[in-house]
Image (cartoon, rainbow, N blue to C red; front, side, top):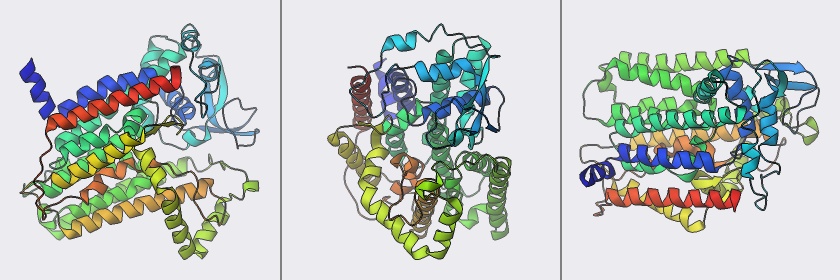
Length: 474
């Protein structure tokens, strides 16, 4: 038994599965319903997908869902059982968001256990943000919810089943990423177990699938680019194409991850022609999928903020085109102003960004990540300056797309700072960022025992669980 435990501790993918499942389930149960960011909308969209509603609806009706800015007469969402909306509204008798003095009453959740689903008793519920997402990042949650509906359980149990399957799919994707990557296995282990990423995975968030798939895509690219194997099996290229399409359909802003293809030496595909065909094929298929989905939902878009707030899509696009230099300065100003906030949120500012972790936890996690990145390398794996330059370009392009999307959706025309950007949006970029730290020239004679890394992950997860428990119940 002791020998088996030592084996697990020394194997990052095995240690990850055990820790992520145990603490993921704890986070799933401790965090009250709808206390992950936008979880109301993720719940509605997941349920819609579970019933085969892959494309949402736009109607002029009296809406009953949660939305602040959309005019009451124009709604985007879908027909859902009335009990789904009741569950969302009655899961807590007090609003917990941004009010840490309010606590979840367990009785509020228990009281919903006997609320019948009544699938035929439907009402139109609005969820304009999530309605624009393709079904792809909601398939895990929808599968859990479909199982619940098959057995006729209440909406609150369906909610938790959605969370559970979302967690398990994410665990599977990260497990494969750690197993596949030829470098930085322990670093990926730590990145996956940051409080924020595990918290998201244990919710109904669409980010769980996107993060897991992005990590796996990067790991496959790393394997092809850095493993000594001289040739590439076709199944690897097909895997990249599939993941690229799925990520593109989950969040278009991460499309530049496809440029990781340029990490691969041309000789590994045999010729420049084969190399170009592979790159063109992957990107063409991804673009077709993105454009096809965009065409299907083009009539569903509703501004998230009214024109009176000076947030008008056409005017924002014109401003960017006519003032490109000023827009770049706005980007730089945004990161210089909010950069530390993004970093804190990336490691872990939970709930609706209203539950902070201790500063020593955030700082120690960052220091450990940088240290592991600097001291972990393989003597037979060399990463060229060109490969690091490609990686940096991908990070910058993706960051530009993320912030531009938030400028178009949330920020008044000509504003000096971009609103709405959150640190968790950069999680898929973290394996790429730390690739820039890959050190093969300066000999740092430091070995961090695997037991230390596993122990720190256990400490981090335990502390996070305690903070969630205190935040919502004590």
